[in-house]
Amino acid sequence: MLSIAITGANSGIGFRAARTLAAAGHHVLALCRDLGRGRAALADINAHAPHPATLIHADLSMPDSVKAAADQLAQSVGHLDVLINNAAVFDQTLREPRFTADGHELFWATNHLGPFLLTAHLGPLLAAADRPRVINVASKGLLSTPRIRIRFDQLDDPSWYSPTRAYYHAKLAQIMTTLTLAEKAGGCLEATCVRVPAVRLDPDRVAAMPRLLRVLYAPKNRMAAPAERLGDTYARLATWDGSLPGPYVDEHLNPVRAPASAHDRTARERLWSLSQTATGAPAWP
Image 1 (spheres, rainbow, N blue to C red):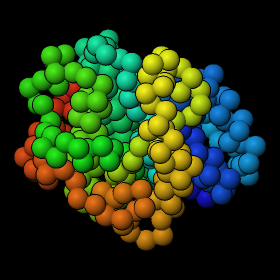
Image 2: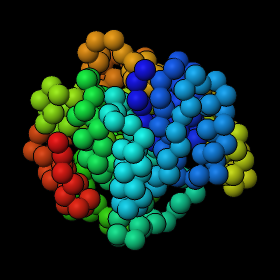
Image 3: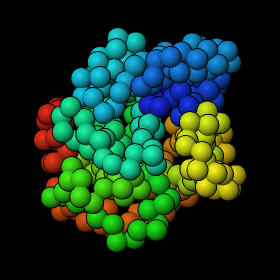
């Protein structure tokens, strides 16, 4: 039985992965921002689980919440075999940028700084596992922006913001962090990033959209990959027998090429350093 933490486990891919892994007998630690939705998801997950999953509150945009989640997780397990940083915000209705109490743009805080900080705080539990793994998540949409780079001098600058730009920017950071983490771990930890294609939204998320956006999004949602299929991808990676297939893989677990800027070692080190500073210089084991 593996101990597997999944962020955003109350809906979408994260929920499907949590349900699949729990049904297979693993101890799932379901990290959710909304406790009400998390409890409902947990009831479904545990209806098929030999070992009950554990619900943990975590808002990745808030460092104090991330630290509290890591502390609660440490009280639940003695080691952590797999961390799946799945949760992300991609709200197309946020036409203007929002900022956290720490002054960070919401997409950047939730989709990059939060997972970065959570991984650091969970480092001791990962180090205590026999074969620890970290699975991060990027987007196939990055193929449409092959020249994308980290805006080092404009990380929280609202002038270039759009929901799509902010989302892809943070997802590029996830790829770069994965590559750097694997190098810094020196073989003590496996890290991979999954290039996720467009995923079919759950009905409640579609219903929450403004009517016009719901109509415009309907054709894309019909053509998108089922969340169940991507949940199986996460589950296969979490339980993969042997070395993971690569540092950056598609939904079929085939190695794929990351954006060119992700291979810039100087840029990756600069991103790591800036992320360390922005998250309060957490200690890494």
